[in-house]
Image (cartoon, rainbow, N blue to C red; front, top):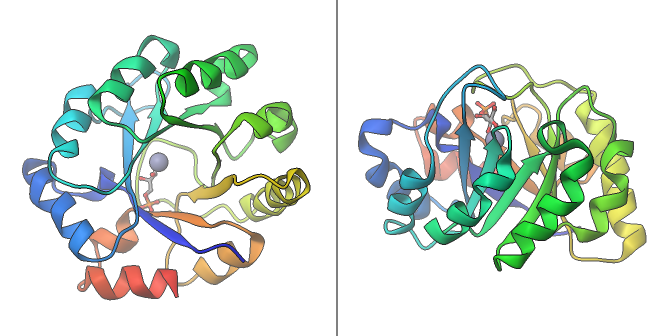
Length: 217
Ligand code: DX5
Ligand code: ZN
């Protein structure tokens, strides 16, 4: 079993003190910082963009895991890479037949790349590009908001991707995002996810360090 990494989503942070929030995550044992970029078009919500990533970069040495929930991500990947992203993930639903091209474009910037699928998109749609990915992200909620209920059919997709990755024999992370908490994290890990995004579970916790440790254990 691969080591499990916890990627708290700053979507649930207090945006008015993001620097402190990110520093706190690092102190509390987070492995990555999950940055949810939303444009109000691909999803029904607007969060932040390149400037936020650039400023967060100065506040932490943790890898920045940038989840782009935007249309035409190819227009912006270079700038997110320059801003300090360590990994950029893009949605199949936003790229469709250009997904491979966009992944290669991300790689060219020197940043790790990943493909994301929504709860109603089958793994089949990204199967061909998995060998190109450093990470595959399975959404366990429809993107847009934190604090939603975990959609358990995502577990089968995690198992399916884990099997493909094992067959390939490559170092590809399997990430899950949405509604993960201490109640379901065991199942999620057992299915084969090794990068766990947790927004509300970490930010609403009384003790962030304990919660991150418990999610990882
Ligand atoms: C959803 C985002 C997730 C989400 C996770 O659109 O991509 O990263 O904020 O938050 P929780 O863990 O609260 O579901
Ligand atoms: Zn996310």
